[in-house]
Image (cartoon, rainbow, N blue to C red; front, top):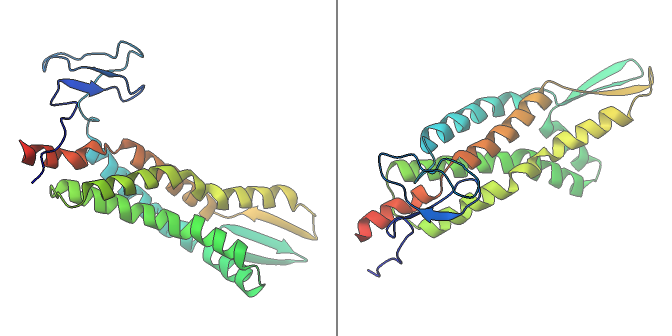
Length: 210
């Protein structure tokens, strides 16, 4: 087995969580601060696993009403129609707008679900101290952290429609209750990805290499 390169922790260094400055590790009984930004220094983000698990569980609970409840309510000539995210995707598919349907499905259904699955898999791998393909897991985590904000596309569409379609008794579009749940899912999963410390993936590799 090839020996892993020396890590910052082995060299007595650690990275500031806020400005990423590499500084000398403070004594175990001291709470050092970053000389550049003043943030408290930690070898790993405090309670990273517990906070990430809590946020992921909250996002899973909110994901259900976000997809079951209507996200838009359309009133036109005395009739009201409530559409969920999936019913909107189906509508665009039937009308021939496959590109719009694909964008909404990927951004509003697939990406949030994939983020939750990836985060759960990473958390379980860290919990069970798995050494399986740490580089690939790190790449998946970076992708999850990067694409999180793009899930807000559906909320942007709803906001634009609500603002533009205001024709009184002829036609109006209102945001449904699912919009709040969906926005909460997106924000919470972004916080979950931010609260996780990817260095935990590599800790078991470092310990096995000692």
